[in-house]
Image (cartoon, rainbow, N blue to C red):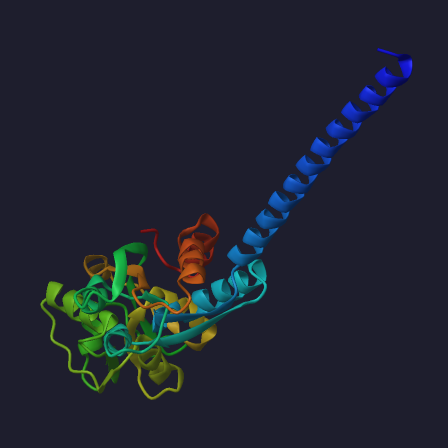
Length: 268
């Protein structure tokens, strides 16, 4: 073979190798582009609708803002209220992604209708406390003191978790109490004291903490026998299931637990 022929053959091989390299680069580029596309499609967006017990208002509002900051393009909206009312709305077809209840009993309203995905997880617990007027002018020091004649006491409705827990605590003490009103959620009961429409209310420690100097809290030992577990669940027809799962993960994460315990909730 002549020198010229060898040069021509070598040049052909070089061009062939270059062609293979170019093809590989094109394939890698396409693959990389596909990965980027997939990552973008996995990015969370849209609204997450959370139905949550009224006692979670302050801590969940904080967690909602944290979630939006961590996931630009998302928005967390809340419907806070009595757990039994929220559960009835969900089973009635109200669109929501997440349900956080103040008791397993109210969560069961949803799970019994197969409106939740998987098994609800307990993420915090809550304990009762007596909320009195600032300075505790009526000198309320125990659950029994709430039975004093002339004292205006407010309780949550018996169907609401805070009301059911209060009844359990009263039963543990063999006490009977007739309140001036039964409220549909714990915030409504607390507001009665804040507005001085009642002298005292049996609410959660977290609500007393949230009220600051608007009320004064009085602990009572019977509350240890009526601690509520709070379960959270993804709902079956969640419009934004992907983001909802991530919100639940935040609630159960160390970061989420830090926010909840700072509000006065107990570890699950």
